[in-house]
Image 1: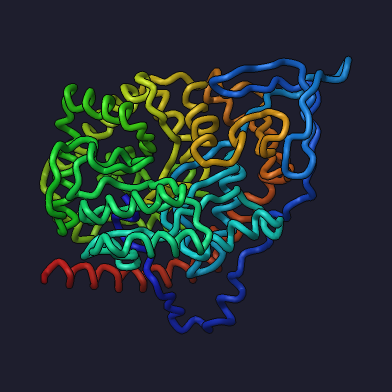
Image 2: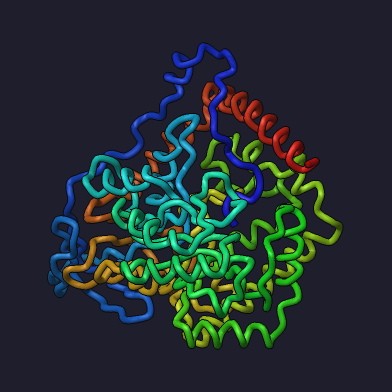
Length: 490
């Protein structure tokens, strides 16, 4: 569900507040400077979720890789627990139209232990950001980029690439590969024949296909390698797309609220037989289930890490036609849907279906990094142990991305590591004991990350930035709502 509610908009309106001169004063301060690669952890307990743990180990990082894992130096003091960095398998890029939101998002990922993200709907700018991080020009998690959404007509989002003829699939995928993207994202309104052609072309180029099961396609016929948000699993039919957002959301929630044990069994069996992975984004189900109480969402502690305009303007649902037109009982359905999604996730995991941790950052009231940690708690609520939840965000996600030993702690593996004072695979409350983050071989201490977050909050929540960004956001929101109301009356 990609920014279902209120779009951030496209054009910045400066509102006559001294224009570029004033916006120049809003440029974010330098938050993190990437350090030289290299690190040593002596006398740590190495924990590979789902695989093993070794006490008293010395782990040496050289360059971007783990150089060695040996016995700890005699008499050295235990440092804590060393785990692989977390992987968020479903994010979208920050909106940079006011100023450096991408800087803030990258910082928040690292500050919460997220060292890899898969962008499931970015454009060329994501490739540029990916390369700048890899070179050490800027600090941030490694990025795998799927490119823009590929949809049918009319697309859910106007910025999508549309394809109506299956004969165009080969050329589209070839251009995608030539641009340097790592995966292919398919979306809601593709025709069955076009989806099949895209999947075949992507597989011919060894590209993973991720996305939503399009509305016209049955889940068992989709051929998608990694289904996002469990989309399509709750319904047994294919149908013409429902264009009205409120009607579409209410129907989808009704299907989820009515999810039967027989349908769960079918979804599990089909996923196993076809080798389909699932990125459930339970945290997104949670946000939808609480969207009737936006004030509580705005007041959440993690939301204080973002500029105020996100919660109070960009993501504010009240006043939007899709929200105001929802029939009575919608939010009760949403809460039943969330409960049933957790039932399905547990059944899938118990049967051996590959589950990936992801969040859909970019959607309302989801905070980079913090929401991935929350996703792990939802997995535990669904029935997984803390260590099994960690496995979905490390080992299994790393294996699916195709970079050898990503998500592991072995010699030669990518050096993405987290040091904790307490073991978070025994109790997720220990996530708060994070002491250091190594991202692609670059070590960031807890003190460094905390200082950067404090600087960021001081800037983005400061009086000048807040005043101007809220003014811009109010003008933008008025324009977006006016366009939405006009569209709704057609």
